[in-house]
Image (cartoon, rainbow, N blue to C red; front, side, top):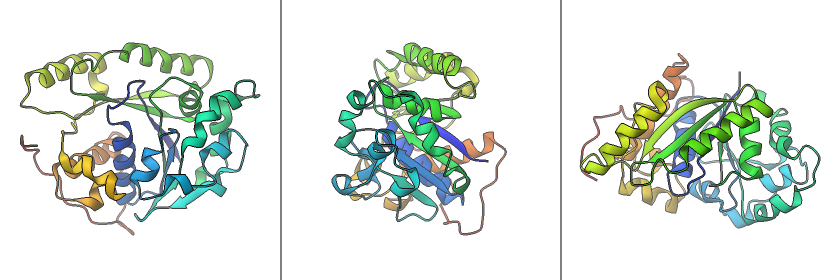
Length: 275
């Protein structure tokens, strides 16, 4: 059964794209056919996986605006089991193009129905907004993961975003559920980070992922080389954290990694305090 996971938060700079890329890579490296869909006009997930976003055509714009079949936009990444539907600045015009379109909130959901049998997981990276693209993603999803930066203002707008998720559940997509929160860019040496962690734990309760993504220079470098962190530096703390996240994600579903065709990844090590 295919499961669609949205990575979303209305705040920018909280690690959405980094999480979408590296969770997808972790699931693919565990042997599960995975499709990542970039719905952000900035196209950072697209370039972060080694594609020239200006040349990624056709792309998700053609799907949600022109109703092109999704399978015509899928490209293979350099990582086995990981495929991509890219995005670029074409999407900037999607809000206007869809303003009066019939079924505008369900375009992506309808497109996914034709390709779901090919993938175990579909991961959707969203723009930092509550616009029509994010609504399309939530309407197509089974679960949503909300990255929260371990810094000041981390909780700003969080309750509003969760309320929006609940509203999509109530009016458009009754199967949509909150997978949980994920702390990102976390520095355990900072008192503020630990205070944020405490508040986020209260907000999400048992749904908060135990895995914490550290602030790590190798994670910041990897997109510039068009690689997920597991390829760019598999021994880094960032890679260890995202391998652990993928394992925790699968453990919540009582799913074991598949051995056939699987790339070997290092065992997660205790996260050190150094950046």
